[in-house]
Length: 329
Image (tube, rainbow, N blue to C red; front, side, top):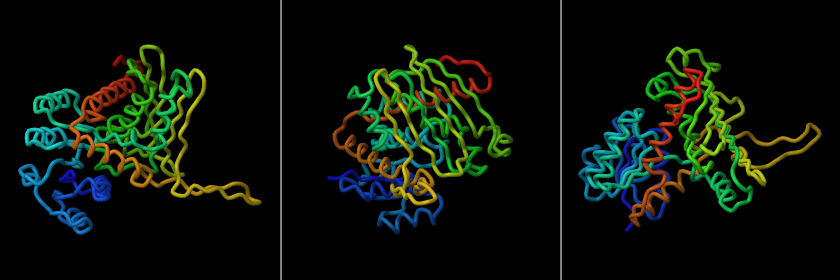
């Protein structure tokens, strides 16, 4: 029998996960819950699932697992509810914006022996996975330096900024997880610089829109992260890993990978416009891995501990940017 899902949240990321679940032969989307009736009806109409309340999904005997795509400030409470309710849990990052709250939530998950996977989808991107395989295969020797560039096409609306926890906890947290994924060692020191260069309103709301971070491990391995809320040329997603005997890189991806050459020069199509298309394969793969984890009862990865580690790096980077000092993790 396939894994039977309840989807909590029918917004932008909820639609992405609904598509991944519906396309997987080992899964069934049974129900969706969202306070906005139109959003829930759109998913219900497209995939033939029920519209239910969160309470009904929690109590349902015909649902094995939930995907939490609700606002961040609801994540920890929902994880605890469904852990106690005996459901397997996939939760979009972050678990919470507060480290002690995440720690308390993970204690409940452990006590209930619940399955919890955190949605760091970039680990499942086929290009980034190929970079990791090259590292594991010894193709570049020992990892020494990592560069991660992640720039959004444009800033989110003000109401999102006020609930997001800021750029380090919302946007860079993906890159903190990717840094851990590629470095092979835990960062122990963080230096950061942050500015408002894109939209003054972001600064007025107490956040930044342009940041640079340097992570250093105990052995001296380094990762440099560059984030911006504006890239006029599309969704900019690149990584490079330099090692003792070589380098491996994943370049930007395009919906169509062609190159045209003529008298005007060489041209290529534009980049993906945002994460919903750039990481479509990654979302499908991470849901497939979660389904396999639920069916086998094996350990989930990325785990709640991975989510906590990335949040600790985000907090350290925010402190480093505000103080101008290097911060120990």
